[in-house]
Amino acid sequence: MGDVRGRRGRIKGDFGENTMLTLDTYAEKAKSLGLSKAEIIAPENVVVGNWVRLKCQYGCGGYGEYLTCPPYSPTPDYTKKMIGEYSKGLLMQIENISLTDRPGQGSKLRKIVADLEREIFLDGYYKAFGMASGPCRFCKACDTNEPCKHPYKA
Image (cartoon, rainbow, N blue to C red):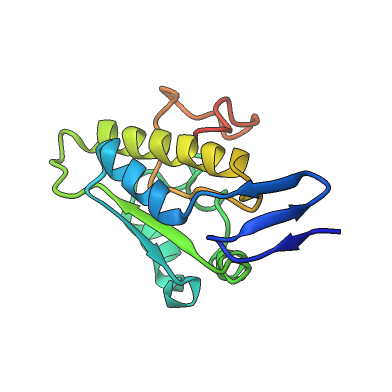
């Protein structure tokens, strides 16, 4: 039925032909939205360390307080498996954030990641999935006993 060729190729099938945007386009857009870096990476180069979860548990006051943090967030093993299902990734970063700006910049990054994920998905990359680090601060207090109130941007 269809023929899908790479990220720069075309999708052929019952929907005619549709030229897809390259990941470079999304990296440039991320930078234009205020991110310091946005680079295409190979998922096999992503290192997921088990120590990170322990650092959250024993070094962060947010542990267990946010649905985006352990113990609610995906485990390292699950994260490794999920990342392994992709052929390319887009790594984005905001650099040189002061301690006073950190919550606002974290929310900015989460919003950009969520908006780009949606755009990339709507452009035909149906496996698009954005992940950000750290606690989500869209709510004053996260109710971990209820579903997330901002699932499309948290």
